[in-house]
Length: 206
Image 1 (cartoon, rainbow, N blue to C red):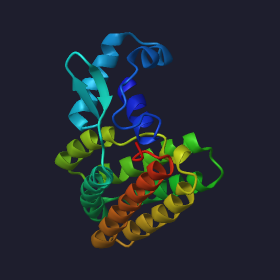
Image 2 (image 1 turned 120 degrees about the vertical axis):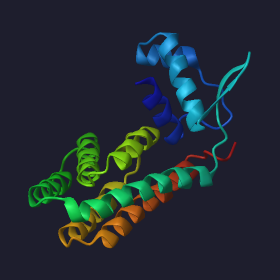
Image 3 (image 1 turned 90 degrees about the vertical axis):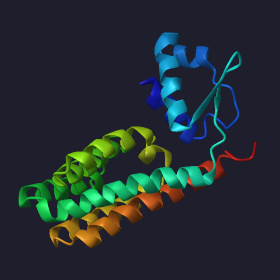
């Protein structure tokens, strides 16, 4: 929980590069002790989001625009491979479920529910790849992406809905190359949105 919340705050521009992490405040906000918070900071240091400086404390790392693009692109590349495999393996029943999830995302669900439906949408495509190796890699990578994307980016839901329809269309046509390309573009566009939002918030102005 602490790892996810700190990651969200960094990508939402609420914790700026170079600033010291207020561990007391975060622990109080989340209702947790210092131990799980320190463990979260160690995890985030491995991800490159936090720098733990001996005798000084934890600081938000000086993340670059390229860091953001790379993070989303790598996730998109692996997700694209999964979608390429899924185009061959996915059942008609699963395609129907994907269409239903896309419908529900477009039917006035609030942003939090859309986020959950989006995760389920991509999870089902990933599992349809029937690749244990890809699923293992995706399970690790998905933890490094911030939650709350739908809530933080006002224009993203409409764009995501269009992307999801393109992805389902490619999977229905059993076109691995188109499914892969659609997924990769979906995540590349997500990176552009994330960078733009951080720029608007002055993330790199300090």
